[in-house]
Amino acid sequence: MSLTEEQSAGLNVALNEADLLGFEVDPERRIAGATFSVLTLPESGPVPEDRRVQFVLRPVGRVAASLRNGRWDDPEAPVVPFTLDELLPTIQSFGGLSLYGWEFIGVHAKELAKWGDRLSLNWTSGDDGLSHSITVFQDPGDRILDLCVWFDELTVRDVQGTEIPLDFFIASGKRWWDAFYAGDERTKGFGMAPLKGPAV
Figure 1 (cartoon, rainbow, N blue to C red):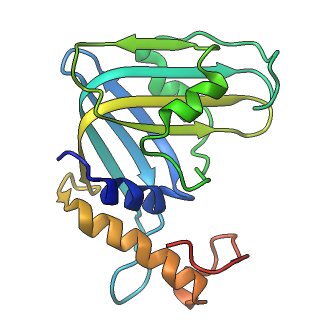
Figure 2: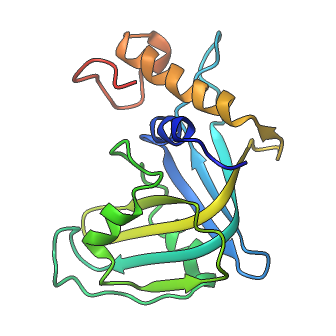
């Protein structure tokens, strides 16, 4: 499904502090799949043991990435080129680091202003697939990967491949953060402590 502004904002919340496990693109079918381990909470009961979900993006109109050997703020950090079929192993080489910053959907202009002149990969396909974008990164400190993928429609699936209604997925992510800021015991043990009130 295509995204509303409210859903885009909700996805920003649901993806915050998610671990990025994989991202791959099928150029022939113009489909991308991104795998995350997300912070999610049911209406009752504990946090699920397996928190992996897959985002399926289609059609994909552009993929831009910048892989650099150096700190994120080093303008001289060498750019490492790679191909579209090397995207998944490149992502996996970082070991599934967390995303943070609360902004991932529709922020391509702001992000490309930072690294768009140092691209390792810039793949385009067709005139469509540009309605929305998702921007993610991996940054262990000594190298960094910035990635932006443009698409028209998004579907979320669980580990069995069953589609999760988008609004349900967003609500589960918001519920985790609300519970976290409320001091809910179910959200402890994730290496974080609240510094301020709810952001949602």
